Length: 402
Image 1 (cartoon, rainbow, N blue to C red):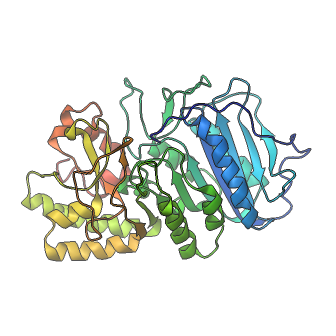
Image 2: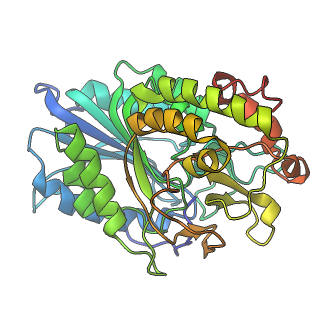
Image 3: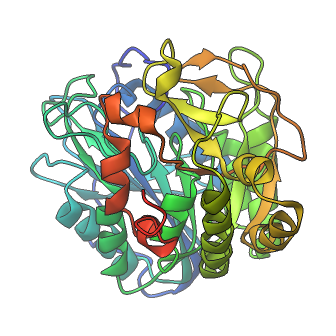
């Protein structure tokens, strides 16, 4: 979830009429096709155009044979969802390559699959990247009765600037992406709280890298004029380091920088095994956990400390594991979390709150859920809902008494 609500900007992007045939590039397989899934039928609708404009600047630095394809659904009663191809063309930088005749929920898994499959079919490439653009809360699953925040891609279904609508849970996102004919070189999540062990483990088989922040991102999102060229860098290490560096270099309205990291997903199995071992030893010697002072990234209610969660994974293990266990675990962690950029201040639910100290030793750049007794009394039943995530079972959650 992005934390600044922007007024809806009237006026539509000047788009060309639909081309006579879908997939004009289908005769030539590109080296990379990057798909932006812009779920903006919510309070972020007003930010969509400015980000598209930044993408138009960024695309000037990519090959003419590569593809930046943007699916857009904004809060407009006069506009249906559409897909555009952005390219380095001053006269016509945005081609409308598909218009939908009916509105639909961007959080509908079948529609999401349909959109991405259409792009893959009509704009084939050697590899693919996916940008998830919009609101998110990582793995968190909201109780259906509350229907306020749950995972990603909220769509209110009424073309209004509101976040009260249908969301997609992370296991559903995994199912959608698994059904596609191609996996992704990277998933870049330009939405809040997506860099956590639960999400990374869930998506480990559908992408090589997950680039995301464990924290809440600025309301205007990524600096796409800089990041788009980064994402078309075909050296993997340069791709994710430059992306993280350029996002981190941006300051938010309070002068803070976004903590951001990259997870190499093929190392998540090893990290999970190491975490299962170290957690067992921790839980064998501890029956209670003092989270005061631990680095955290999320709170459903910032005025209530009992709601603080998404604690930094490294910070928790560092505090509670013995020295040898931590050293062994850290080796696996560093193989999985291949790059991270630390910040000493960031937003939690739109507010700068720092009752903890951030240091290089403590900062891991990825969060992990820690079941606590106090969560039994919170609105969001974290202790119950965590068992819907594959991570919970992989680290032996039930064996730990979670």
